Length: 259
Image 1: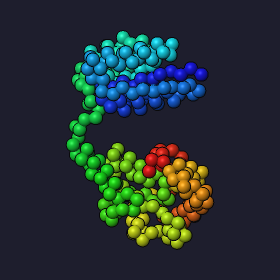
Image 2: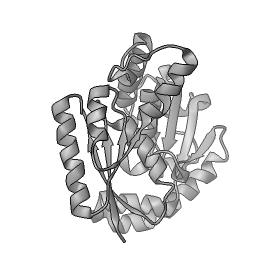
Image 3: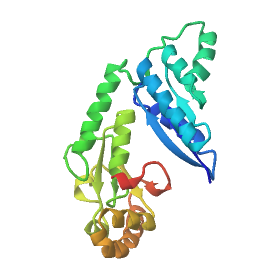
Image 4: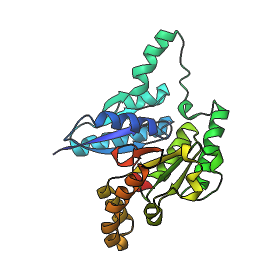
């Protein structure tokens, strides 16, 4: 199977180009792509260097690469347009029609998507992130300030979910791990019992939990073989007797292996 090289070009970090480009590539099953991100292409010299890399890939592979671009500056974009690649320009596809509709010329300024136009919102998200970090894995004690408290067994995705909510939405989120003793007790841990209205339980498929724990700590693999199947079953049984929401972490969203 031939492999196509895909470049993500941006005058900033390249996150937008990567996100949109990957979303489109997932629609083509059975094809193999080699992805290369070229961030901070913000000058003529960097654009020319990017063109050399793109053309070199075309020469080596015998087919033109695919380029997803969020380059804003016209002089930089025009240079990359001269490469031997399929050039897909996200900004050109949408900015032109928007300018016509709004009867206004866009600023064509790089980095606007990651600016801090709303300082209050930015500050809230940073403070929420600090709160999530200081109230991770049962640490911290200021649950009264939390908007959400996630509970679940270790490696069910609590930490990345809390950080996502904080960074994206400014939600003050804490998380508390359920241990084997907690599950056998059949009641909520005392530290979170008084905040039941804020509790959300994350569950995970036993097979996925086993895989995560085996990858993270291979020396405990034998224990991971015994414990995971009992944990979600016990957690779900106990959760059914208390009043809070249950969210299946392994059905999508965050990947718990990054917890």
